[in-house]
Length: 271
Length: 78
Image (cartoon, rainbow over the protein chains, first blue to last red):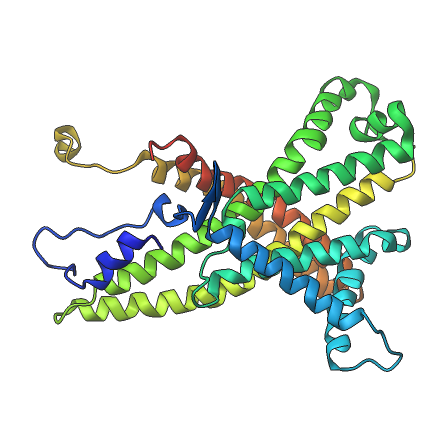
């Protein structure tokens, strides 16, 4: 939340029913942050700080769990193994199969990185999902895209790679006229775009909803009947926070699931 | 109607646009989860496979609604 808005709300002068006091609807200003410090034209702001904290957390956690692996796992190693096994069993083995085990480490780190970035949305004082700044999911989608393209062309060669990308098998020849451009466009351009936008827009909308109802519950708080609306709004904000916890997990899951299904497509035997 | 003619109804067209954009994905997500649950009930041993495919379909369908959320901000003035 921006500083002006915070002081504006904390001043407590603006409530429902006051003269000349409209609802301070949250908008894009919730997603603009003042830089913490600047180096030349480089701005370091809150989402960057949060993403670095998350990166350190993920690295430290997995380092601590797996640096000295034991046959009988300790508590930390057990939790780490549960997380690793979850991604391996429910995502990679289901979509890629046995030959996907090589890509599990990348997908595990990606999953926990995205999940923790999303969870920052409901951690007190952080309270901003890092993935609601589009640069972060776009960067991650670029990593997935480069992996996808590299694997496709490495496996099938140049011509075979393009054939794998835009020549679906088992389709009558005359449909190819329409289908090949669509497949080309969808596999190369639309896939990374939707991958990034999906993670971004879910977190963006979720954060906006929580902010909306939090602001509304303060705004509606007044010594009249408005207090009733205010408390209802507060209950909705709490319920949305719980719902967001589900969405955050689901989005990390879907991102990694789609990434692994792209890898599966790249590794497919040519027809 | 006279209120409309006098121009007293104001707001953002984007909210109507988002309402329209959410119809298709709403139907699609309902179909996907409805049929997914039905498939899992019929064949509980294939639940893992069905669930992962269900979420892929959900993600692809939901993308349309999400683009609908983002576009007003992209084309809005601020």
